[in-house]
Image (cartoon, rainbow, N blue to C red; front, side, top):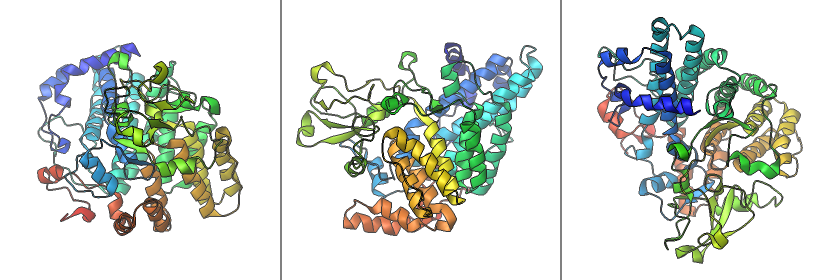
Length: 512
C-alpha cells in the first residue's frame, strides 16, 4: 500500500489533469507536450490510477450529503451551514454549493486519461505489458462507472464525457445525455471491467480499497436494481454471494465495520489513513461541539433524528442501535439542556456501551479528532438486501424474506414472516436498509429508487415518509414539492449553466 500511495506523489507533476476552475466541464486543456512527456512507463499509469482513487476520495463529504440530507434519518445540528440547512428543509436553488459536480468530473477525467494513454505506454515501456494495462484500464472503467452512477441519481441527465481533455479540438461544451444512455454506458463499461479486474490483490487494504471483480458486481447489482432490471441484479448479487469471499461478521463485532474498517463484510470502501495525511471531514461534520473548550470538538452539523432513534428502539435487542449507529450525548455548553444523537459510525473508535457526558469523562475520548474513517461504498448486507428487493419484484417472496432475515438475525431482531404481500416486504426491506446503513450515504438513493419503481406506483408512500415528523406547514411543502419527480433531482449549478449554453437545466428549477 505504501508503494501505491507513494506513486500518488507523482501527481504533483500532472498539472495538466487538474483544473483550478469550479466549472470542470468548461475545462481548457494544458499543453499536450506535457502529457506526452509524462506517459512513459507503467509507473506513470499506476500513478494516475492512484490519482483517480484520490480524486474520488475528495468527493466523500459530498457523497455523504447527497445521500443523506434530503432523507429522513438525520436532522440539522447546531452549527449547520445555511446552504446545507436549505437543502434539508427542501429549499434548493441552482446557486447552492451542493449542486456542484466538478469533483466527480475530475475523477472521470482521470479515468478517461488512463483509458487513453495506458495502451500507449505498452508500446513505450517493454516492462509494461497488455495484461497490466488492461487491469489498470478496468479499474478506471469501474471508477468512471461509479462516478456516473452517482451523477445520474443526483442530477438525472448529465453530460456523458468519454474522452480525456487533451487538445484544443475537443468539444468542451458537451450536451446533456439522457440517463438511459448513461445507464447503458455504465453497464457496458462494467461488463468490460469485470473481465479485467482481479479477484484479489493479495493484500487486505488493496482488496477493500481498490476495484475487484466483486466490487464491479456490487455496482452492477446496484445499477440494475435502480433501473428495474431485476434478474440482472440477482445474477450480479449471486456472483458475490457464491464467491465465498464475504460474510456477515458477528453482531457483537458489528462496529468493526467502521473502526478499524475493512472487515470481512467490506466489498469496496474508500480508504483514509491519518498517518499518511489522508483524512476526510466526516468526524468534523458529525462530532458534537460543546462550545466550552472541551473535547469533543466537531462542528455538530448533522445529528441522527430522534424520531429515527425511537423507531430503532422498538427493537431493544438490536445490536446496531444505541451507542453503535448513534450515541446519546449530553455535554457542555447548550448540550446540558438536551440530549442529542451523534452519528457514531464516523466518530467513535469502538461501539461502546458508555454514555459520553461532557469532555472525555473519566479519560474517555469520544473519537478520533483527525478523521480517517473509511467511506464504505458496498458491504455484504447491501448485497443480501439488494437481492431481496429484486426478488420481491419478481414474486420470490419467501427467498426474499430469507435474505432479509439473515440481516435481521445478525442484529438479534425478530425475523420477518413471508406474507405474500409485495408492498409489505418492500417496506420491511426499506426499513431494514435504514437501520443497517444509516448515515452511509444510501438513504436518499433508496427512497428515490422506491419512489420511481413501476412508473411511480408508490410515490405517495415516499412522500409520506419524507413528510412524517414534520410540522403541518413543512409537511405541506414537502407534499407539494415532491409530487413532481423532477424535484427529486438537484439542479445543475448556475455557474455551469452560465458557462455552457449546451446544458439544459432540470425543468423543476427553471426561473427559481
